[in-house]
Amino acid sequence: MQTILHKNDLKADIEFANMIAADCEMMGLQPSRDPLCLIQLYDGEGDCHLVQFIDKNYEAPNLKKLLYSDKTFIFHFARHDLAAIKHDLGVMIKNVYCTKISSKIARTYSQGHGYRDLCKELLNIDISKKQQSSDWSNPNLSKDQINYAAGDVLHLHLIKEKLDEILERQGRKNLVNDCINFLPTRVELDLQGWNNDIFSHSS
Image 1 (tube, one colour):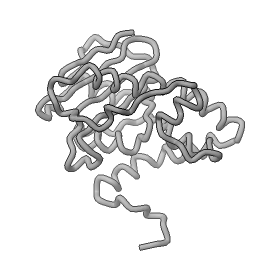
Image 2 (cartoon, helix red, strand yellow):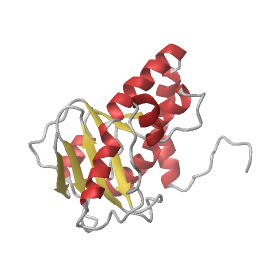
Image 3 (tube, one colour):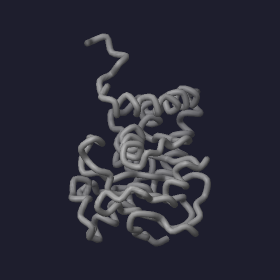
Image 4 (cartoon, rainbow, N blue to C red):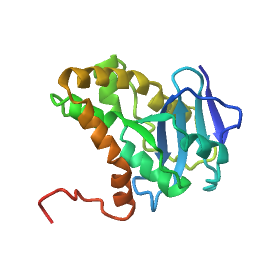
């Protein structure tokens, strides 16, 4: 497997399997302020593809065609990534799986639901998050940044499998599906400024 860095769009002839692990790197946590800089894509079979957006060039017709497709995209904390993709690329992905939502519903015995936590417990893999807070807008990404970005999608397929096993045993898969189906609405609320918990009793 190689990690291939693309500038502003995928090449037209790249084919992906039906389930794609995906992640985004931004300049911060607010889509209206912090631009989308990088999207990572890995289908568990071929190479890992990184699409870097230079000077906020978000035309990316080949990437958008893939995001609009019927393929399923596995994210960790999909709420955040979907908001960035919708804000800057104008695409709301149809089919999504979120490992953070699944972890919170499956692993009620744990308080650790980060990607690093899941890699450690479910796969016995230690990963570093050292490059998480770095300048992703730099047009010349470092080797460490590229390796970090690829690492954020390489294990999502296996994590999904492990979480699905727990959810099946606990009879909670339908609950996860219902939460994931609500994500497009939750993302729209976020983008329009309702960042609070609208179901909370407090004002």
